[in-house]
Image (cartoon, rainbow, N blue to C red; front, side, top):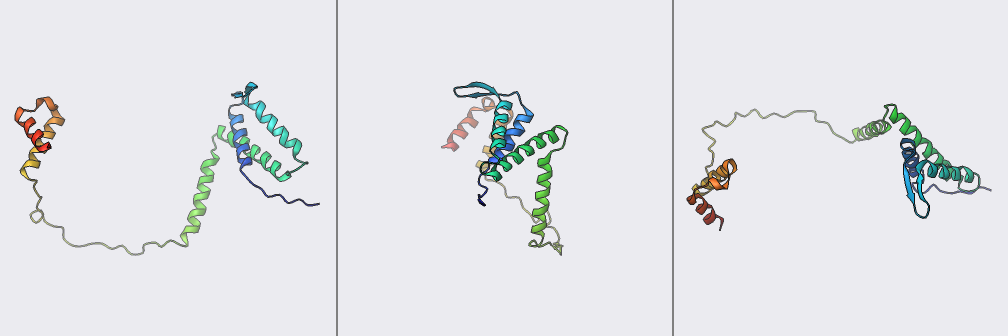
Length: 165
């Protein structure tokens, strides 16, 4: 009798995270409702034991996936402790495949176009001067930024007040 059961969900990934966390910090306290503080490794061992005991009963593929996730979480942390970061390796591998598939669709520049026109002379470019009021405002604001508002004269304060309306 063949029973076909699809693989659904992310429980293997959750198991991987649980075992990785337990491998990294096994003595972490977890407060459970109605039970109190329990060490994280106790919770992880109970969940792994349940998976091992149920592997032949039902959803064999799901339980194998849980155990594979647990194994990956353990290996990930042990390699990380030894200085090998799998996440960087996986990222580089994914970038390689993305670049591999994108190269067929991408176009590369084959010809560089340069503009050989002569630059505009300084005499031809005229700097537009601001009107007198804006120039005065800028000078007053510069003075405020250098020395503070209190150093302004009475006329400068009145001018700012009048322009601000």
